[in-house]
Length: 450
Image (cartoon, rainbow, N blue to C red; front, side, top):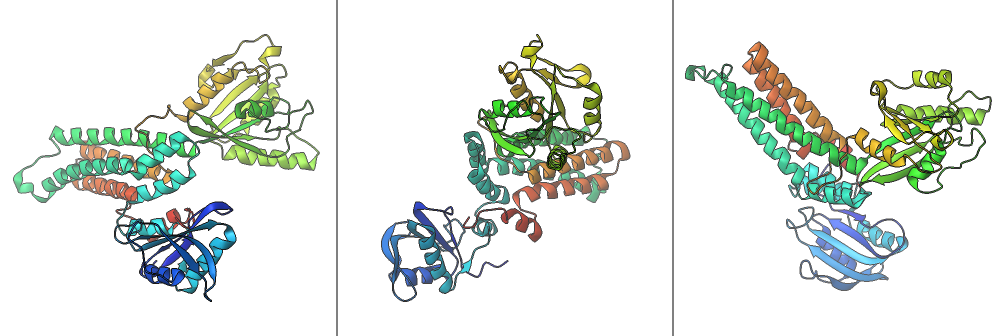
């Protein structure tokens, strides 16, 4: 990766629109802008109406030119934006002209990557840009905006400072034993480690909420044919998404729909009825159903309360992945003289409802939120990604290990090393410590032009 060349990309979404933007960033951006417009640059951050000229002097488009001089720009470099008419042909002609003049087609996320490399933002803030663009609810967008403003990063930095202070206390006792600092016998170090764990766990809980707000959870609806899976899908989605008939095996493929529960996206997946069949098409549907079950965050196992088959249901449950959260939903209570209820015998949740009347559906909605660990979105929420959660969990493990080294083994050197590794994990969140491979994976998922 190099920052010496000038990159260009269409920054607006593919398709037709009133306005489209081609963005340039780099040392040659100014020269390219002068060649495209055949004019001098306007005052920085002022829109200037001008003609966009092609290779042979022909008029390509007419629009606005805006100049953002570095280092006070998004990328920290000289940035030029051409605002033209938002047709894909016009935008592509303008982009190709920039490439002819020496710019290079930007990679996905390369503008944000340069902003990170030029210290305009840290890695968590850069990732929040993609989260903001991809937000599926107002709550998720607000959380991403708070991460972009640095709320998440500030909490990580505060935790890092606390960890560094604890490391210094331990390492000073190791390096200067003549000072007779007996940190092992001193309860202060235990208190510091306990407080460190408490603060990390609070940050992890907040990050998990932010992750759910942004990414949600995947809920698979499965069971034997005609248990009411597709009816439940339609009721939760509040649309006729799945075909519903009295004929067993109507659903033969995967049907997906995303709903919102208090701002948390829930990705519902309706599947084919789980049974043995001689129909090859239905067999493929059942195979796909099991594939979805294996990757689910939660499984709703639909059971017709009037047509229970303990042997068949037990066979299905015996094939479920270990550790998969399963909620048994007994449907058609309106035909069985049974009221809506939620029960937890042997810590296994059972919900009684009717997809026909809607009775008991609210119990299921609340249960999905509870099962995910999601609480109603709050003003302090921020967005977080899977890698952030993993880094925080790994750091928690390291701090627990440091505590054990102090408490059980009296090994200050090993405790200090565990805290150093925990600090490195926290630094990976903001990008203070990161590898090129990590950066490549992160920014490759961004939009072109962002």
